[in-house]
Image 1 (cartoon, one colour):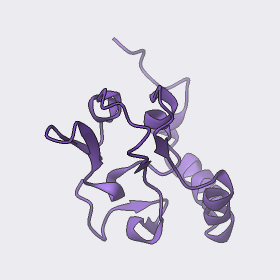
Image 2 (spheres, helix red, strand yellow):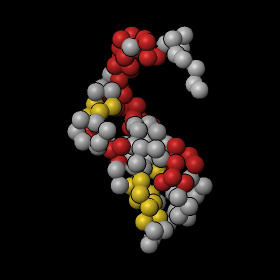
Image 3 (cartoon, one colour):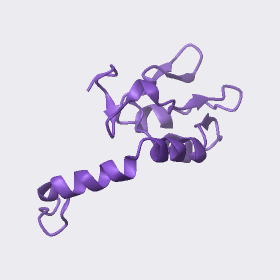
Length: 117
């Protein structure tokens, strides 16, 4: 999925949600955990500066803070939980999620899922 206007989160165009990491450069040790742990291609690494760079912010999964959680230097920041909860309420995301569960039982029902191999 590319980071274009067709990239959505619960039917909200992703470019309308300001959710992505910000690197606090003076705290960053350049370990690369954020770059190598993000499976969505949000980061690249500037080898000359020995720092991560956010190159694809709209590919960051809304609500995910894994990179900030694993950063040993607290060098990654995200918008507040209040911001994302406001987006959820304003756009009725909980209703959207309930509709997805109802309409896609074969995908989400624990009794229908095959065990991971």
